Length: 409
Image (cartoon, rainbow, N blue to C red; front, side, top):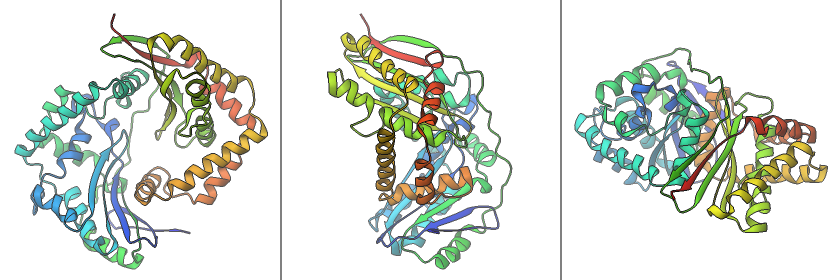
C-alpha cells in the first residue's frame, strides 16, 4: 500500500503518498463545483476560487501571496463542474507553512467587498477572453447544448450579468451550504513522515467546525440529440460532435477510456489524427475526449478546419465511428492499445502535483485510491467485444449531437 490516510474528528479526510523527491505538494480538494450552483449563483464557485486569496482574519492578500512565494513555492487553485482545488508546491521542509496557509485561506477568508469589486472585473475579462476564442467557446456552448436546463450545462465562469450580482453575503451563504467537512480531502504527496503529517493536520485542522450532510445533486435526464449550426466571426470552421457517456461508477467506464484513446486520444497515432490530419492534411487540431462526472459522462470529438474541407472531415469522422461500431478491433491492435494507455498512465505518475490532486478526487468519488496494479488489471481485462458494444452504444448516430461554428457570409 503506497497510501496513508486518516480522518479528523470533523470529517476532513487526509491522504498521503510518500515520495523521495525534495519537492512536495499538498492541497484541499472540495467536492463542490459549478454544478452545485443555482441559476442566481452562476459562477460563484469560480469566483470564490479567485476571492479566497484576497484576505483572511490575519492576512492581507499581499501576505498570502508572499507566504509561499518567499520560499520559492507556488500556490494555485482551479474550479471544475464538481470540484474546487486549492493547492501548493514547495520544498519538503516547508510543509507546515503550506498547510497552515492553505487552511487559513480555505476556512478563514474574509472576502472584503472592495477586493470583490476588483475581482469582478478580472473575471469578466476572463469570460470575454473565452468568448473571443471560438476553440474555447464551442466546448462551453456544446456542454450547454447537451445538458440543457441543467447545472452541468452552466458555464463554470458564469456570465457577466451573474458575476456582477455576487457579493460577500452570497459567498458566505454558498460556502455555509456547500463546503462540507465530510466532502473535503486534504491530499499530500511528498517526502514527509506520516506521523508528522497527522500531528500537524490535527494542530491546524482539528478546530474547524464539523459540517456534515449528504451531498444531493440533481441528476441529468431527458437527453435529446440536437444539431446546431451558428454563424460566427471566425476564419476556421469549428465543429464538435458528441453524446452522453458513462458515469464514474459505470462498469463500462474503463472500456470507454480505452476506446476513446484509440479513437482520438492524445497520442499522434490515434485513428482520427492518422485518418484525417496525417493522411489528408485537412485539420491542424482534431481530438476526442471523455469527461467523467459522478453521475454521468460526456464524449465529444472536436476539429477545426477550412470551410471547404468540413464536409470531407465529417464524412471521415463518421467513417471512423462506423468502423468501431461494425468491426471488432484485432487482438494485436487491442494489445497495443492497452500498452499505450498503461504507458500514458505510468508517465502521468511522474507529475506528483497531478497525482496529489487525483488522489483527493478519487477519495471523494470512491472513498479509496486505486493502486496502479489494480488499474492495469482492469485495462488488461477489457475485451474486443466489450469495446464494440460500447462503440455501438456511445457512437450511435441517432444519439449524437453536433455544434458547428461557420464564418459569416
